[in-house]
Length: 161
Image 1 (cartoon, rainbow, N blue to C red):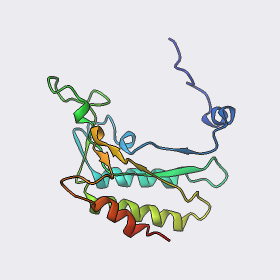
Image 2 (image 1 turned 180 degrees about the vertical axis):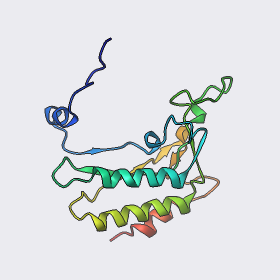
Image 3 (image 1 turned 120 degrees about the vertical axis):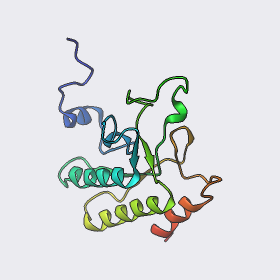
């Protein structure tokens, strides 16, 4: 059997060899992906809890810094062929985050702020998924459903200094 590139390698060794000095996740969908329990829809709060647990799990002051992520939402069904059955087949046929409105997004941002307070050695960097990922249902840009609400929640939780 052929090995995949990087299979069996210690990620720390690979990061050292490539000069990578911090790591992060692109979004939350990998934490709830491809399980019967979460398909076809996962509540935003469940994905949020799973990802907050990862923040703490990956925080090791002596290790390579882990940059936390908050995801605005996730729905990759626009990338699926509507003529095919929507089944648990892997990306883009993955669970949709439901109940992911501005208030839930604000809860995740508050959790990030609390994480920073509880882990003063952690990098004070927060990645957000995403500004305009319309075909994955992840965006901060104003829309016709919620207007500017996500951007306003971001400003409320992390006000300008």
